[in-house]
Amino acid sequence: MGLKRIAVIDYGMGNLRSVCAALVKLGAEAAVTADAAELARADAVELPGVGAFGDAARALAERGLFEPVRRAALAAADGGKPFLGVCLGLQLLFAASEEAPGVAGLGVLPGEVRRFPERSPDGARLKVPHMGWNQVELARANQLTAGLAGGERFYFVHSYYAAPERAEDLALGCEYGGVRFAAMCARGNLFATQFHPEKSQARGLAMLGEFLKLL
Image 1 (cartoon, helix red, strand yellow):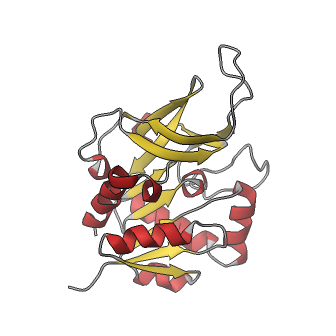
Image 2 (cartoon, rainbow, N blue to C red):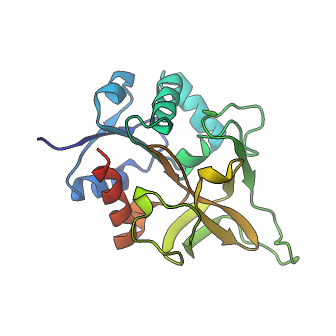
């Protein structure tokens, strides 16, 4: 058997270098691509992202990737080829975001993407973006959360957060300034993290390693 080939979607806004470096370190072949046909050939798909929801959705559409990515995510949710979204790649799985009213997301997961408020529920000023290491809470176990008991720390950088509608889609939760949000969503073979596993040192690499075991 050869290396497992991961199609890392290039739509001009992903942190591709660090994502690919982490996958290669774990023994996979990272194929950075904007070719929809490559998504079908690869063993798994990763949707990274750093930037704005509206710009990202438009970039996917302009490159002819919006529907292929949506189909890949829906198939993964139904138990098909594994799919991993990271940061903005998690938010894009929802239908819409407060960041870009009127711009359609992929609509794979029901729920909302909201902006962190300027003040926490107790009235204290909340620094946005939420940046740095934060603890996660285990809500629903899956293969990628193997070995987690809750309380582990991962690296976050984001001003908007996902609030899934279905409790069963929430795998890891997190809290920032009194606001609770999804640190990881999962359904079938579809996984998406708000944190950056590729920047989360040993714990993040272990999670990516578990993703590769699905292939």
